[in-house]
Image 1 (tube, rainbow, N blue to C red):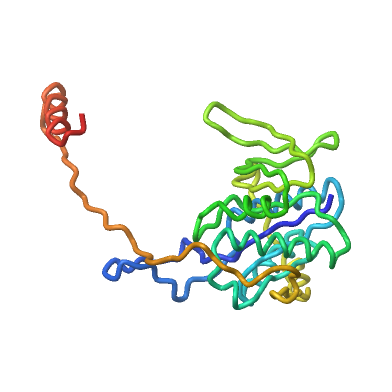
Image 2 (cartoon, rainbow, N blue to C red):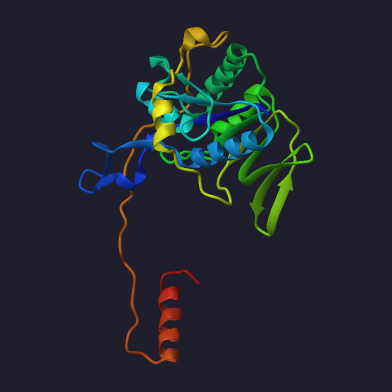
Length: 262
């Protein structure tokens, strides 16, 4: 089974600080990592490759530094990695990114001389969190898709995708090729070894620009970010102390009624 995993390099959200006075996120000095949801997609791809054979190729879209994210994936089981890098994509939105990645997937298929049976993405990114890119890729390629996967396995020649819903679980078997976005797995993604890190460091990462993606116009994003800010949270709760239970309940009902909440 030939598998493509689309990954994104994102800021480590655990290191981001908030400037309350300026109402903005402080990104200076924040390290970049592979999007956590994408690490589950990568692990699902590696597990399938180990069971079924085939090739696993990683594609990332971003600046030159995003090669580090690709090399992290190479160190934990990916075979090849490609970076889509062009200044004209710097401000593209989720739908445009999906369109570009779909064309990059087709271009990589031609370069590698193969067809991908499965395209895996993280369910959403830790920074923008739109959860739209995987669906956009599927739409642009005309492929079936399954979102919010909690497990991706194979049995008797069928791909099985487990999804959670309000009353339990679904297990779906999409026709291949297909796109699956992964939210979680039963096991955590593996860590690279020193040896695999060294090997990944030496691996060349080809770069794809707009000129390498045939029949693709410069992006025309439909989304514009006008402002980014931290919401102001006001503490206006009421604590009822030193009252008998019945009196506290009556007072609570009175306060809720006064606030027109009941």
